[in-house]
Image (cartoon, rainbow, N blue to C red; front, side):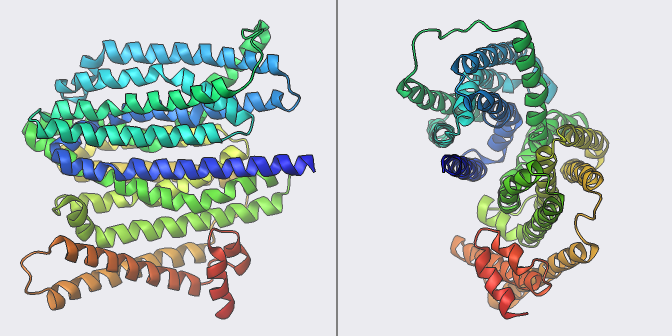
Length: 536
């Protein structure tokens, strides 16, 4: 009974953490749209140039090191060995304190040099502000890791949500205030970046409140630790911590490569600074859409990963193979549907969200990223669950090398179109390597050719349908309109999403890509399972 209660607690904790992560990712993707309306394309360029540096700090403090620390704590929490747990926390804090201070010092001291590498010396102050967020990492990561190791996910979840709510609130409020009071866009960008500090401090305050409420013995707060234990903990933090962080940073690395190569390459090949800034700002419009598509795409497929990990632990290989195939089919269905839907409706979406259709062709190419990020994330998570922690890292490194090479080659001739092609090609490599490594592990086909072919054909059919819908709408229904107002744009986009989504889902169900039993494993899958049962 006690074992069942513990498993139930772990399961509930995983759900809480997943929902918190989902909320923060959606919030992180959507706030950029109002920010773009406040600061414009140039203001958006300024913010996005330096955002990847903050994203790295967020990844280290939220998804990387807390996971490893929690595993170390969980090993000793089972037998209630509090002294050993204190030792783990001390070593972890010391390691992360050195890492955080080193990165802070490097970014703060060499901020001007980094800005020059990006091609814009005015970004110096923004980089210096971001550097302070690395000083918060040791505190946030260790406390989150401690509570996660005790299977108490609430402190982590609450601190994540509060951090992002305060950060986004600071970004929007300060940017509105600074723009309205006549400050330049770089100052407004600095105000927006300051949100990373206010958000981090808020997270830390909440975590400290949980620490102070926890009753612990005041004696022996600092524990003497054997050298062998220090080496073991240090080795785990360095190797496993960095591996988890790198494997989850693919999209961040793409943005970072663009920050250092896109604008600087445009200006180096004769484009005026302001024109290059506007072009980079338009290019960066694609990020919120890619993030939202990826969040939706992975929300369903990654829900199966804990089930797969449990089966791996029990060495139930047939069950593992079955669920891996299901998760990949699911990620492909959702990824293709989201990507092809964005491609078909990108012009009205661009008009609705950003008030013009500039860069629609570039954003359509970037939409392909949703397929690759969704499949890569699912395959990478399964590989990590199987103990193959190096494979996703190799995939990310190889993909980013391709992205960098293609950026340097394509941007001079094709500008942001070249950067978009490079991004899609880079993440296609990440997905391909992850799938190949997974195939070598399982030695079975991951997605049947018939199923994958049917999914892509359905996606293409949806694009044709939606393009026909837009053509008819503009040539027969609103043919006399001199441009569309916001209400018509909402109707046009909303109806397109509904028509495309229902058509895509209907054809996918008709092809029986998922069985009734498989559908019942998914969120709201029982509704779809009833449809499959009726149409057998």
